[in-house]
Length: 78
Image (cartoon, rainbow, N blue to C red; front, side, top):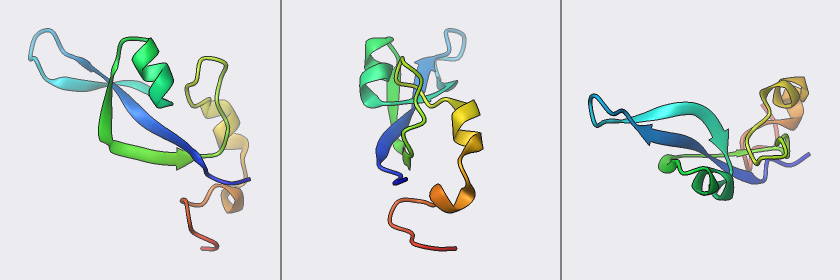
């Protein structure tokens, strides 16, 4: 399985501080925009296709993938 799905951290603004904070979600650009969050462009990462139906990374599926299959994009071995 290739790590070829681009995902980003979904961010929102903290009403008290005005700072951008991570929502706890990591998903596709489309899912984040659809749900009204902002994208942290520095958080670009690549993952296998372990997405839920909403376009966010499904942590249960991602944790079940063997390490050898989830190496960073472009890495062939440890």
